[in-house]
Each structure stands twice: as structure tokens, then as C-alpha cells.
Length: 143
Image 1 (tube, helix red, strand yellow):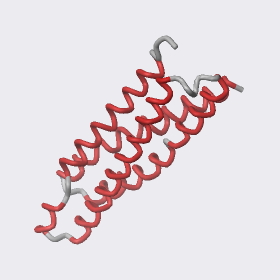
Image 2 (image 1 turned 45 degrees about the horizontal axis):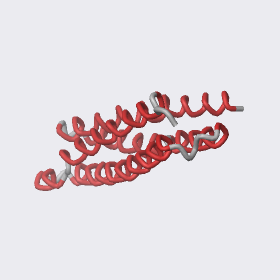
Image 3 (image 1 turned 90 degrees about the vertical axis):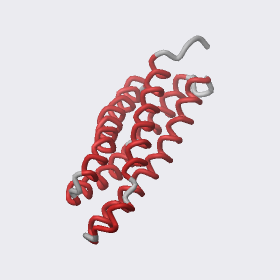
Image 4 (image 1 turned 90 degrees about the horizontal axis):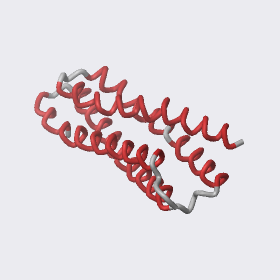
């Protein structure tokens, strides 16, 4: 059972978090290029992969409970960081939706409303959070 949970946890991490990180990092480039079609696709992919990342949390908590390590500090830190990343991801998705709406109006004055720098910054922070979580899962420390 534990090996199946571990496999599912890792599979969701690879096939949801990996593409999600690439998608949110590509969004600022699409905004700078003013490519509305690509931006709309990236926004949709952000939503879909963002929902898929919940599988990482679900199977991680399930695996941690079955191994008896759920109360350890690195598990608590990882879950807290994951929730922070989800909140930040919600902000990125909201800003991407606003950017798609702005480009749909095709009004040149509206281009200043697109929060390109904020999307880029938050995307970088999300990627860094995922790296810290990965570090905590590989090198949890003693006790």
C-alpha cells in the first residue's frame, strides 16, 4: 500500500507540479508579446494543473499518515508551504484571467493594467517554494 501511495504522490508531483511551474513561468512572456490566444491557453492550463496539484497534497498526507511521520516538523513545514503555494497560485490565476480579459478588449490603454511583473514575481516564488518542499522531502533531517 505504501509503495502505491508513494508512486501516486510522485506521479502527481511530476505530472502536475512540473508542467504547472513551466506554464506560470511562460505567462509573462505571452503577456509581453501581447499574445491573447496563448495567454488564454496558459490561464486554462494553470487552472487545470493547479487543481491537479491537490493530488500531491492528498497522496502526500495519506502516505505520511500511513508511515506515521505526519506529525514531524518537515511534514508540517511542507504542508504549510504547499498551502502558501496554492494561495499564491490562486493570485496568479486571477491575474492571468484579468490579463486575458484586458487583451480581449483590444484597447491599447488597458495594456498598462496587466500585472506582468507581479505574475512573474509570484511565479518565481511558487517555483522556489516547490524546490524547498522537494528539499524537505528528500533531506528531512533527524527526528
